[in-house]
Length: 517
Image 1 (spheres, helix red, strand yellow):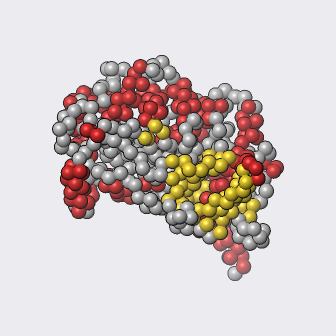
Image 2 (tube, helix red, strand yellow):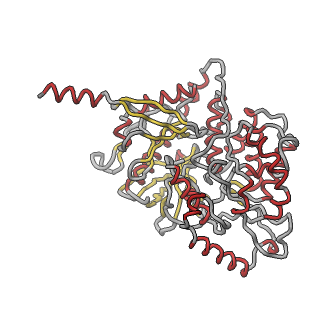
Image 3 (cartoon, rainbow, N blue to C red):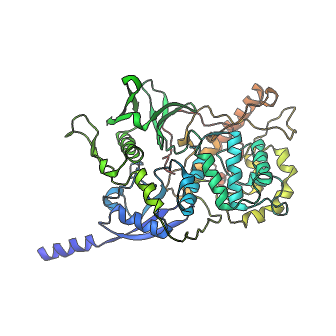
């Protein structure tokens, strides 16, 4: 009996599990791991696959059965952390954003960080004004399709790519103008480097938002960046605390505390409330890791931290990696032939719409779209054949997503929809990862009804180009009819809605999706 139990236990320990990790270019890496394999083993497999040496900036993210996201801890068993049924699905993402991404030693590392920030831009986590948004998008175009070629790139070609949650025709013209006139001759590596240099100057660079509420019940997003702790409310950064001013991080249940010591011995305690105790613990652990990574001089200075004032009570956690200064010193010693970079071709994306998943939202007027429809169709195939990874939409479906407002200026080519971001709410624009294909279609349908969080602040348009109250009421009627017909079988099968996305998502709260990606 004892020998039978021991043999059964031995077989259980030797059991292999299938793991799929989604990479930054939306390709997948699949491997098998033993039951007792640690997170470090899986991470090392990934880095070997990617030929990545500067790996301390990256991590593996997953969602548990309770829909709470986590970073995989490298010192613990993968199977025990996931607590779900195999096969396991996770994501490879940037965990610690480099303070100066342009200073990274190897091009392969810069390319992976470029892919991450491009995702942040699309998902509304990286906010910027219109001029900066146009420049960033133009760098992406140059990196992925090369120099402007009138034979391959027809009028309106920049509108075929999805850079942000929502575009305007004015912005698309500006993107194309910069791409045509300012970036000619730049190699993909140069364009990516310039993209990183620009992105690093933005206030929300490196922001991985955690939804919370302040003591007054107002929605807020907390985040940890290379430079300190930030709080975002109403599309504005309301708090920025440098890492050397943060003295302590603590949580109790759903309540998160940040202790701050500023000049003249001024001490502040910032208090926020997470949606669940698990979300609050995740926020706390992220804060502990980021503070250790960016603030400390040596990893030997890392200490085990308790979530409570009493060391024997509450959660205990210790950051297990190297700190930023050590990583940079180690990178300076890298001496090898630069690895070959296989830049992503156009692949179906699970986290943003592509040709496979239907057209993107657009604010280009119908009259404008019809005028360039033929030339766009002629040039679309050449765009599809390019070696790029930014999602492309098919113009043949454009009519079902274009807002049509009846006004005296409806036929004007200069009519541009105003993009206004009254609330910073990236959770509304981020799809959960992993996600089933049928769930993706439902999420896209939901975004098309509710609108998508915008990642840029468009300049104010004149009053003449703003819809009147009567027009808004008429559009509201269309939206109500659209929502009533949402469950019709033919619309569910097609994955599209016949009508314009009329509302901008401005609700404050936790959001209905897991902001993993």
